[in-house]
Length: 157
Image 1 (cartoon, rainbow, N blue to C red):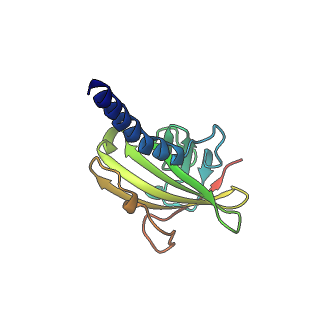
Image 2: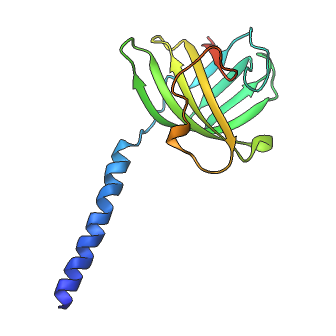
């Protein structure tokens, strides 16, 4: 009887870890040199929170600067790459989720990025809210130039 209980307990533990292994395999692990990382600029942007003139993206997140030559950030955001893929035209796509830092503490975002095939043009759609939960259904499904949080930036040399 004890042997049967021990066997059943071990079986339950083993079976409960299988789904975790499957989920872990699907998680994207960013490389140190992701195409998304770098300095991006657009002098035509108006310099607000949605359209900064300069954004620096690293593995830790991104920092926006109102004007290209500013040294004091407009905002800082922690972010993590959720997924990455390449479309049939060679464009590179990312789904990124993030958390605000400082004055933006408590704010969350889920973003869709499109980088040109040459990784020199970045477009972004943004969905932000206050709260704790990330939800895959909150990712933008397309990048639409007419949407207010649309952003376009160009890789700085």
